[in-house]
Image (tube, rainbow, N blue to C red):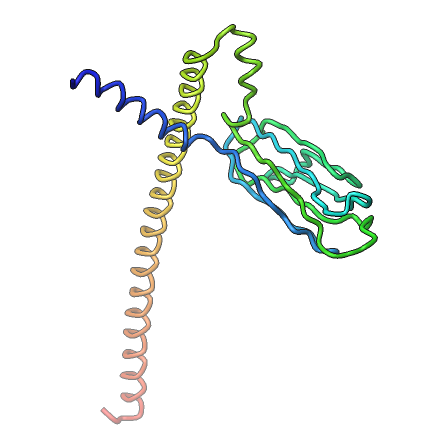
Length: 213
């Protein structure tokens, strides 16, 4: 009985890991007639990003157009498109940081008002084309699902490693800051004591000259 429960427990753990690793979500944006709205995502190095965007309008006779710009953490343009009703961008992240995708109405909206945009944003393992992998490696069914779970677990492991590294960096920064604050406090205390001693000596000499003491 116990042996039969162990595989089920491992499958539950793997499914939980897959939910953590699966980073694909749909986003709805209502763009004003002027101004822009942006979506940002913190992504680490060498991660595949895939996104589809489409303008949604009840009036099919007139579809408003938008402009799109995607930039890296250092401001590099990764995707730019204007006067479109739909599109797609895909890239592999060149560095770790916050990636920004901005959308705005580009002036071809004759009726004015807000423009609704649907964005299907996929990151990492969620952006992988598993159908191509299955055809290329000739796998299907349970084997394909196990391959997906393997990718999910690997992604979770990488995310946990990233979190540990950031925690270590924050701990180092905190320790350095505490040390600097301690030295600054000691220095400030020393300056205050020195200034007090000098003030007492000055007042003593002053009163002696005036023959008050």
